[in-house]
Length: 393
Image (cartoon, rainbow, N blue to C red; front, side):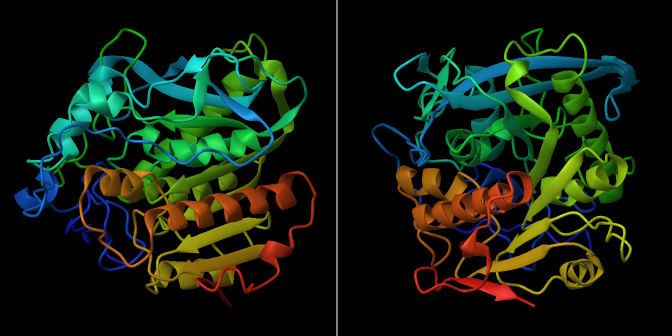
């Protein structure tokens, strides 16, 4: 699939620009978005008196705690803005927590929300940065951790999408007994607030630039980001106050769009990642036959991307390819839920909460089976309760 295929926005809040029209597409850099698409202009948007967004509550037996950590890779210059110095990353850490402890975590910082609105939200919605920051996340700052050892899952968002667009999935995994590192890939989205308080916007989103990186370069860079994060969380003088919660011998990775594609580069270069999941991302590159023999999950939105067909054939270990009927590229993120709450018409047949439920249930089941060794009948084949989840051969 050509990298220039773009995401079109029809009636979804451009909280990360995501209604895919031609495959499990990554938001591309090889061609500029039309102004109407990049701005997220939606003619039918109706200004709301006040936006009070809320993500679905997690379903596991634990509450979800959240910390935000700032990491600097002093050995690696920033790949996109070398003048900025060493690579800096902002990472949201979610973990199993005791219910009723901590304070409710914001969805975004005010600066992240302001950048998001400027870069993504269509005119006329009336949403403010404070309202977006205050979206109910069901994660709690400073919550008391539940003692134990838990597998680590690293999450990587789609291109141009800030890390927060995978918050619902992150809290769900934490509630089921995982530590989750949700990585913000600096200069690749509408803004991640760094340790110095700055919130730089995307430096590589202008596809018309002759210096725009290729998708393979982006996935390779993300693999380095992820391996660095794993290093910082599991080695020596750890960068996170609760690092003792992590079972460093049980690590998985999942991502949306190009974040999903980056799981391949990461698994090829880092044997610590024992299982991977790609949520609707075109593969850049397609792994060679037999290179990946660890468990792998693919979830798509209905179109036959040639890179998926080839990748699935080349996977050598346990594998599942699930296609979600009526979904679109954004289904696997928080975006459709928030768009619906803003009052925008649904861009796809599937209900946003149903899409979130499917994503959370199947991703959790996959990691329960792959990292915890707990057999999950949900993954054995189609079930009467999930007629909208098709198993591809």
